[in-house]
Amino acid sequence: MKIVTELAELRVARRALDGSVGLVPTMGYLHAGHLSLVERAKRENDHVIATIYVNPTQFEPDADLDSYPRDLERDFQLLRDAGVAIVWTPNDQVMYPAGYQTWVEVTEITQLLEGAQRPGHFKGVTTIVTKLFNGAQPDRAYFGQKDAQQVAVISQMTRDLMLPIDIVICPLVREADGLAMSSRNAYLTPSQRQAAPILGHSLSAAIEQLENGERNAAALQQHILQILRSEPLTDPEYVSIAHPDTLLELETVADAALLSMAVRIGKTRLIDNMIWRANENDL
Image 1 (cartoon, rainbow, N blue to C red):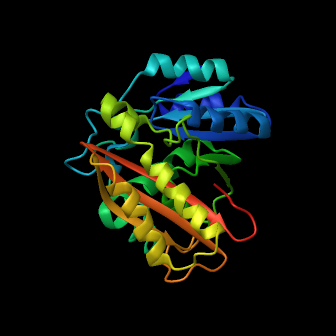
Image 2: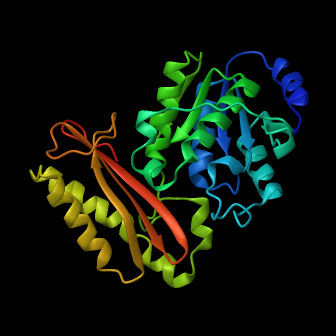
């Protein structure tokens, strides 16, 4: 496995790869969800490139950039064991050199949900993902459903810019107790960690209501909020019942819905989601 930092190093290493390449972009501090993306990329491509970069432009000014968990040596070993060919770990000087002034921005669907709560976040995401795509030149790129709006935004960007990359969206991976895997779970205290699975449980309860015929989005939203508020440590920011493609809020659920939320537990902000479809329940 080659570990490279500079863009020139990456390009030399990339040219040496024959066959198809799958890209797995990460911010590091890897968990089983990340590794599931690597495993799928390895199955579907001749080679896998992973990136590790904590992108400052997708963090709000008062957010947790400096305290974001990092363990590069552990990450390298996990990726080496998983059979990754190249790991690109650019730094800020590589990605945003002096005089940098170019941004990639998707408009409409970035104004909703996470975009409404975190202004500028998706402008940072789409810019850095475009740069990762240009650097790695993959045939396919792998993202987890955990960040439901992010994958919708990146898919939109890839279509709009006619990028020759297939976006592969992989299932969200959960802990045994139902908590969606996230690097930010490391921030939780023991009591907060015990409370956190209520996010997934509330979504599952709403999915069960949909399976039983409930179609009123407001009723589903209130059911989720009632469950969340039964746990004193939770502070919901939003609960959304939206169309999975447009992300527009629904009044009545027809054939599909994205159930999503952002919830603070202590100082930690967690997101979670599930997708329901009338013909197949896609969690």
